[in-house]
Amino acid sequence: MLIVQKYGGTSLGDGDRVRAAARRVAELHQQGAQMVVVVSAQGEMTDLLIEKAAQVNRRGNLREMDAYLAAGEQMSAGLMAMAIGALGCPAVSLTGRQAGIVTDGVHGNARILDIDVSRIKKELGSGKVVVVAGFQGCGPGDDVTTLGRGGSDTTAVALAAWLKADRCQIFTDVDGVYNRDPRLFPDAKRFSRISYEHMLRLIENGAQVLHDRSVEFARDAQLRVEVLSAFTGAPGTIVGP
Ligand code: ADP
Ligand code: ASP
Ligand code: MG
Image 1 (cartoon, rainbow, N blue to C red):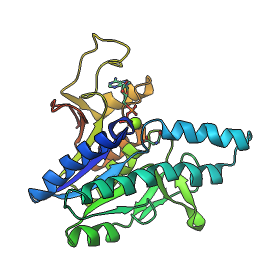
Image 2 (tube, helix red, strand yellow; image 1 turned 135 degrees about the vertical axis):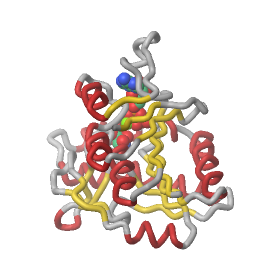
Image 3 (spheres, rainbow, N blue to C red; image 1 turned 180 degrees about the horizontal axis):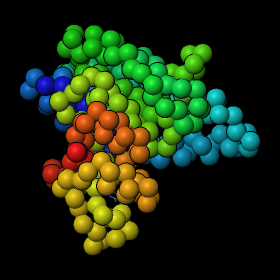
Image 4 (cartoon, rainbow, N blue to C red; image 1 turned 120 degrees about the vertical axis):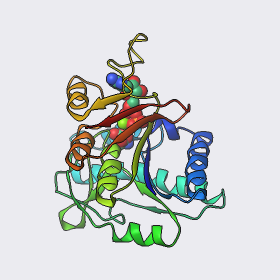
């Protein structure tokens, strides 16, 4: 059983939350699953980095912004691997490039073109949990690229597709996909299942709970994606055919 799990920024917001995610991962690994864990930058880290960059260069520099922003996810990956390791479970963190994620050269909004999964498979084969920095890849000329805001979802779903994972679980700060943003509309209704097309329409209308390209990858691979709360054991939403 190969499981890809993704943890978003709020779900990794502090040390306790990182440890809670690490415990879930280590438990499944203990039960015999091969685990690939994709992580976002902690909390509001990406927004903070964007603000800091604007302080030194108002016009922006897309190549350097990618180098800078990708560091947020890289820190999360190292931290998560250490948290998992502290539970006695061997883990290794990989950047997007180390994970074999090849993108086009559109800095700030790159598309994943291919994934060379050989390194990930080698690490899984040696019994390790593999923690991958989300939101980033390697573009032409060996440059760091980022996948657009919210792009860690796409890292997770693309890895699940390339690795032919048995399960792809997106852990976030709400317990699934609703017909409207449940933070703004307390009477919003949760879907237990939703089709790819319906999900894409919701995203078009502003539901940023999943990155649009993640749903396109899932649809193209006919992969079921589970959207779950990182904080409760609630059943969540399955995005599927
Ligand atoms: P993560 O950091 O885990 O990737 P995001 O902030 O990107 O989390 O996405 C989760 C957020 O999406 C929720 O906190 C919620 O406010 C918002 N959201 C907007 N529309 C919806 C919707 N239709 N269903 C669920 N969540 C939604
Ligand atoms: N950290 C990035 C962002 O805030 C990517 C992600 O969260 O998926 O957009
Ligand atoms: Mg997100």
